[in-house]
Length: 274
Length: 321
Image 1 (spheres, helix red, strand yellow):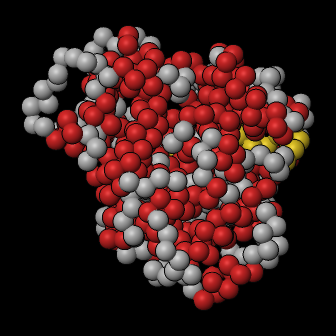
Image 2 (cartoon, chains in turn orange, red):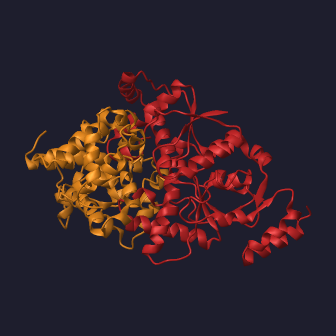
């Protein structure tokens, strides 16, 4: 796999008639309802990729939108199967994805199960090219979490970050962090925690501590902990919690909030808007 | 018996033998399957990114099935878990349901929560039933030891999925034993396969997968058995990658449950995709013995290597049939 599209792929871009059959069959087209990025739709990605291939000057914002659009894909191959022009769309998304990831804009979606397919394809990539985007996404998140960098992690008593706490309300489940009484059962049964001799060193906050961080409204510690991104969502913690805290569901929602927060913060700091 | 078959994204793209073997098995058991082409992603990977998008994605599938008055059968446990979760949340929370229906309305769809969501294994166990399956079995396995892998998103959160007892499940073990195989006891039976972190944190994912498979092997299993595309790909394609990367030999091959049961039902091995797994499972076929014709069986044992061969032979002699 190269850093450029092949000649055939460039010709394929011109073969697209914009009939939108791919978008009508796309497994994740429905995501466009909630995430206003036109590049989620396969038929619309093509126009952006044409601009990219013609070396048009694109803003970082535009590049990141294309990158998010090509990553938000379950690699189901339906677009390729239905394309009347016979374009190998799936391969095109995959290649553009890798080209963009190497340009250095962190992509937070690499930390989701959407990466499973990329993992299956890793033997076709150079190891460094494969690992870099994963490291970069984690680093970009922890760069926004100042408190993580402080050794003592001394917390100011006030004010509690209410907007953050109240943000954990997407489902009724996520509110349950407030009844945690700190018994650490979630941490004890977590297979990820059990995998390390010194889990805190690798994972940062452990599950019960993340529940505390949510209770205290300390966003930085929750978002900046590797534990949040290394959670399997195996639901052992939630199943065993004697207090009925929906630990896994809280972690899911924290990931949602973290992605949104970091994206907004890094966009405003680069001074670019849509 | 009729279901809308929910294949999800991974099976048609990367695990065709799971679809083929499931269809073949269900046909033999007189289950009618309806394909709804408009189905989309179950929402599982989207849940990490945006809760509302997850919910809408999941609910759209349920609304499509509801429109046809069909219960949904999922083959993937992550699809199953996601659809169940969305169903649960929308039954609990009227305002979420209203919001989702607002978006679905544009397509003339509506979620009302009238249909059931089931996993293939539960359909086999509860709707069809062990006895009915037994009645259709032509051949059983002799001397085969299987490590049944339940899969997290089928078992937990039990309050949402209600698949089986989350601490001491037996549904899958019973289904394995109906094939004549022994379902071994293994301490890590209910642990995660490691797939959710493949592509995200490969080192950790490898550690977890390897720990689980080693445990299965140590407990005496010849094969691990899965009924989920993520778990199976992790145990098959990814296990192969792990073994080469960590310089290990002796895999614990993974067989998909409908491949296993399909052999019992006398379905053609090609239709079950027996050659399509990355880590070969064809050795399993040599452990098949016709249920009523055990006496005629010994001539086929010459192919079988050492210990299993002798076990089978002695079984054959002792068996009163």
